[in-house]
Length: 390
Image (tube, rainbow, N blue to C red; front, side, top):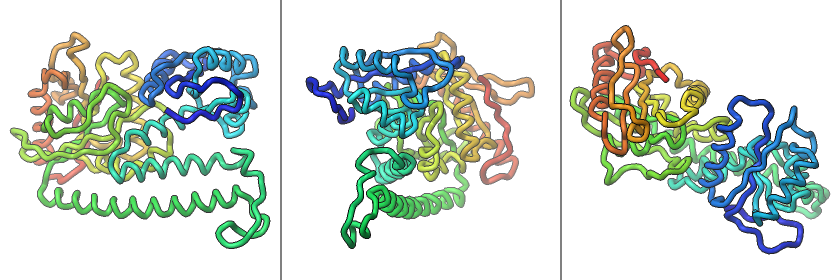
């Protein structure tokens, strides 16, 4: 998983083991958060983990969890021989530094854990650039009093900086330069994407983007609607794939359709990640229709759908027509169906991407959306005619 930052003498810590710290501040979705951080840790490579719970009215300014709870966390880490302690919360740089000093182990907060998973999953050049940008932007906020070595002075001339220039100033300068380089590279890739998008628009191709909470089954559905033998990577883990994959297919009643599989969303998705992946998410912003894939067996499916819509609003995609697609019917016991509201508009389609049940109805719903756009004489982003139903 990650290298241990152990400072206390002990046997070699297990890199695949982690302690998960979940403190209850009176949140209604506390148990959902506990389950989710466990899945995130497993996705990051922590196959062995143990949850340390606790209740507090507010975070401790110095250690977030308080000294007594930190002792409990340390004991649990010793018992599991865990290399890493993961907080299901956002830590300040000072809290993180104090915790690592007290525990003698690497300490991650929720944001850094998600960043680490994204770094593992990025496969394309663009995906790697976006992850590096997000990591550097996050690091830049944690330089002040982040590590003791930054307090030292460095003398000399030239590349090492002027006499007495602080290490922290050198680090900031390096990060700023690298961020600038990454942004320029991503701009070039964005230009290429715009050219491809304009070419599709000239051919009047109907574009559909799959969105949804991570692990809702978007990639499985994408493969089922296109070509499974040459489709997107699928795995039962959070953020199995990051890079947008697009395929052109022919659908009866709709003609040529471009389907795009996008990165999954999650609760409290770090703002830096949303900003870094904005170029990729433009496939969502420019789509004619969003298939909002919902895990029909997830206990928190309503909240998950709300979290997806929050991110869509952040990237200004909230006005694009949505079609709710309830997936995983093979696990829920529900039957395939195409549901309509009182005005005759399709509100929800129930499918199983794994078995193929209900896919004919979903293709018909996509065709109906394409026909409505054509009748309205719109080339893209028609006024909403589909409504999300949860």
